[in-house]
Length: 306
Image (cartoon, rainbow, N blue to C red; front, side):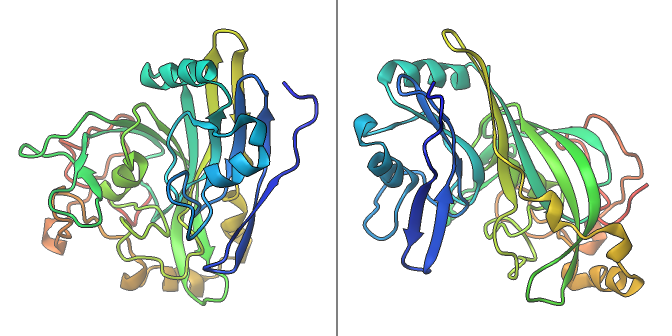
C-alpha cells in the first residue's frame, strides 16, 4: 500500500455547474483504489455529457486504466467504493461479494420516527412490473423476486430543517446493514415499511423536493482478503450533523412537522404498482419487535414512538 494517499480527484458536472471532490481512502497499486464516492455521480457508462466515477479515476490513475469495477453503488448514494487495479485483485474481491463475506454498513436519514429500535426486514426484492423508471419493489406471489434481508438500527430520532426552506421534517437517522445485495434493496425496504429515505426521487412519497440529495451513504466496508488480510474502509458520515439539536426544536416546529404534507406514506405495501395504502388500511403496530418479517406484518405506526 502507498504510504501517502494520492490527493483527492477533482470533478465537475457542467450541466449543473457542480464541482466535487473524490477523496482517496486507500491505494495499493497492486490491488485496489478505494474512494469516497460523491452523491449523484454515476459509476460508469457514457461520459460524454457528464463525467463518471470511472472516467475521472482513469484520468487520475492512467497507469491502471481502465480500472475494474468491484461492486455496484447507486449513483445517488455516496461513500465507500472499490476499484481493482488488476484482474486478479478484482476477481478475489468480487468473489467475496458473491459469497457474502463482505460486511457493508450504510447511514441513512428516513422520513418519520421509526418505531422499533433494532430489527430485520426480511422481504424479497423484485422488478416493478411494467415500470418505465425501472424501479424495484417487494416481491409478491405473482412476482416473487429474490430473497433480501436488511438489519436496521435506529441511531437517533429527531427533526431536520432544510436549508433555504421553512419546512420541518420528522426523521430518523439509521444504520443499515444489508445481508444481501439486491438492486435498490435499502431504498425499497425502507419505503416498504413507510419510512422512505429522504430525498429519494424514486421511492419517497411525498417527495422532499427541498432535500439537497438522497440521504443514503455507504460509510464502511469490511473485506477479508486472502493476501492483504482483513481490510476495513470507512468514509466519514455526512448525516449526523444534519439533524437539529434537541434544544433547538420548538413546539411550533414539532407542530409543523406533524402536518399531513410532511408525513411519510406507506406506498409499496402491495409491491407492484406503488398504489398508496388508504387511511382505512393502516393499522398501528403497538409492539416494538426485534425481528420483523414484513410478509406477515400489516404495518408500522409511522408517527409514534413507544
